[in-house]
Amino acid sequence: DAKTTQPPSMDCAEGRAANLPCNHSTISGNEYVYWYRQIHSQGPQYIIHGLKNNETNEMASLIITEDRKSSTLILPHATLRDTAVYYCIVSSLSNSGYALNFGKGTSLLVTP
Amino acid sequence: EAQVTQNPRYLITVTGKKLTVTCSQNMNHEYMSWYRQDPGLGLRQIYYSMNVEVTDKGDVPEGYKVSRKEKRNFPLILESPSPNQTSLYFCASSPLTDTQYFGPGTRLTVL
Image (cartoon, rainbow over all chains, first blue to last red; front, side):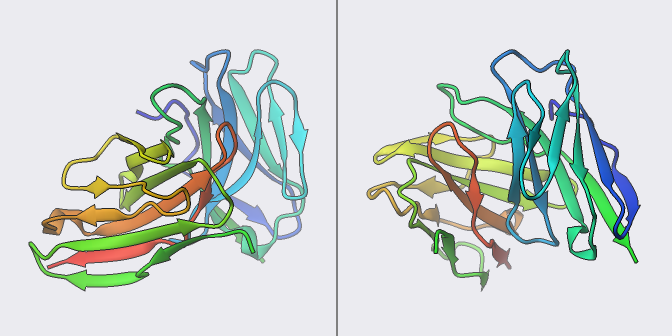
């Protein structure tokens, strides 16, 4: 079972910020929060990841709560090309491998 | 250009006819992995490899084999394909403890 909970779908107007929430209440201390997205059956694309601190890169920002039980991915100025399924994943490298449990994700629709 | 390539991209075959889907990466990554994606089930890991000659089962390994003789290649082998292996397959690679880079996918149909 996925260790994260995300809303199944969200809408966002083009040019506005898209805020995608994720709950991961059972996250353990050595697990990172990763965000990937998948545009219509293409290979998943890495967006951003973090452990405790908020992170920002050229694609997005990641806000992690202080207790690490939830996070929010922010796309500051959504475009139509950001329409995709967004996956929030918690993961750590372990002796059993580095599997990413994608869950069902959030289907984001950016509208004109 | 850094990338993960898969071949073929599309394949239609018949039950029982052995096939291989190739995966190659040019980033010198240690870790490689295969996933399958099915409607309503998301992406599930089939096999992974932490380095050359080191492979291990993921969540759904039945009916599949892999090998890792070279660092750059990680082929997925279906010895006797069955219709329930009709799926969209993704190969991924990463340096250990870092993000994964995915290939473009292989859409397999087994009749």
